[in-house]
Structure formats: structure tokens, C-alpha cells
Length: 368
Image (spheres, rainbow, N blue to C red):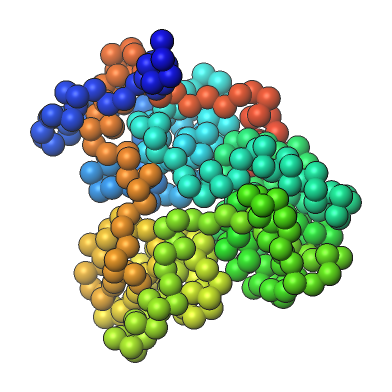
């Protein structure tokens, strides 16, 4: 058996018949299986999913909220997670052994999470220990692999979300003199800056060159940022902000903290996905907004709030490509395979990895 055949056996691709079905046929399959399985099935949908998927979601939210909701579904035997791989991993870590998590398309990954693999991180940690001795506490954004969460948990650190990053960084500084922030440099930089840490006190670890980039003497470094980013949010530029200011002088600009420091600094508001949604929901009719986050969500917000003038901060943006791999045909295939007793694409985190990853998650959740 060659490598391609092995991969197909381990993670079968979408059968052709689902690709040839009409939208009505696909919708009928999803509706039927959901009805048949009832509370034995839970279908969480991330905010960035396509409308054709979100329509069938039992809950929508960010990755951590959906993982926690999955764990709270005591009657659910199967969780079909409509998000990306690291989100399904987190759900598997937090759910019971007798619950099973599935991902409709195994190609639904996250480029940010992939920018920090465990081999790179272990090499970086060894070199940073040589530079700083035992003065660093690792933190990781929940947008990371289970292996990275496990690494952080092993060394006394915790996970963070874009909503609680400030609180978790404060907590980390109560433990150690410095922090290593994985894998998104922008969230780490923006949050630390808001807490009063000067930009020059933040160094960047380049995992490709395996070197620390810093402006001040190493002993003055307080935050070590992993050189990673979100491929979606990094595409919001200063030029986009300047264009909105010219075209719509009275428009509010609100962005996600995964955007660069320059974009966040020039915007009116910055916060998590839930923060953005809540700001728009509570804004008065007639207000105008340019939103700097993923396009599926921006388009949904536009549809749900016709009383406001809402645009994307970057009109040339496309949706998150890996998140978009979860579509109606894959969802129908996943659910029908499950109903037929031949489930596909199970997500199972190795127990030894899950133990330390859960420590990192629990340290954060204890402070929620």
C-alpha cells in the first residue's frame, strides 16, 4: 500500500456521491440524522463557519465555549465539531471517555496552530532556559495543538483566550519573571502592551531560525512572543484603516486582537469575537462599523443587523480557507456515516498528551 492509499484508509475523503447531491438532498440528510439521534448528538458550530453549516448548529460560539458546551452535554454520545482540528482536540480533552468527537473534514486545520509544533517548541524552550534560566512561564493561546497545550501544562503554564488573555498574563507574572507566549505574536503583543509592558521589552522567538530577536539586553526582556500569526487577521492593514477614515470619517473601526499592533492602535475598539458581536448588538440603530475579522462572521453580522451600516475593514478579504473546508456535503457525510455505524474522522488525543493539556486548560478555567 502506497502513502496515498494509507492516508485514504486512515482519513477517507468525501465520497463522490455527496459531491453530486443537491443542496436539498444534503439538507435532508442532516435534518434526518439530527432528528433520529436527538440528544445523543451535539453539533457545535464556530462563528467562522459557513451559513449552510451554522444553520444546523446546536450552538455557535468561539472554540473554548463550544468545547465547554460539548462537555456539558451529558446525553450526547457524539460531538460533530464544525470548526478546525485544534478545536475538536480541545473538545475531546474536556469531554468524557464515553463521548466521541468527530471532525467532518480532517483537512480543516489552522495555519496559526501549525506555526508552533512540539519539536520546535521543545528546542526553543531548551535555548530559552540557557538564556533566562528558570524565570519563564509558558502561556498558549487556545488556538494551538493539543501537544502545545500539553507542553504548557507540563511546565506550569496555562491556556488563554482572546477574552481573558490580560487576566492570564497578569496571573503568569505573579508566578514568574517572564512569559513565553505561543503561538500568536499579535495577541501576545497587543495584550502585554495594554498591560503597560513596553514594546522594546518584548522579544520575538523565530522558530525557523531558532533565534531570539530583541532590542534591549536579554535581562530586560519580559515577554517572549512566538513568531506566529493568524493568516486571516494579519491581512488587515494600516492602509485599510486609512481608507475607511477617508471614505467614512464617522465610522467606528473594531478589530480582533489577532490583528497587528499597528492596526489595533489605529482602530477605535479591539476585542475578542464575542466582544465584537456584543458591541454591534448593543450599538444604536444608524451607527456605522468597519469590522476587522473573518468574513463569514462579518457577513452574518451584516445580515443580522440591517439597522446599522456595517462593512469589512478589508473588502478584499476572503473567509478562513481551512474553516471553510467544513461545508454541507462534509457535514452530511459525517452525520450519515455516524448514523450508519461507520463514523469517520474521529478526533482522539493521546491520553498522556491530554493529561497535561487539561492541566493548562484547568488553570485558566479556574480563573474564569
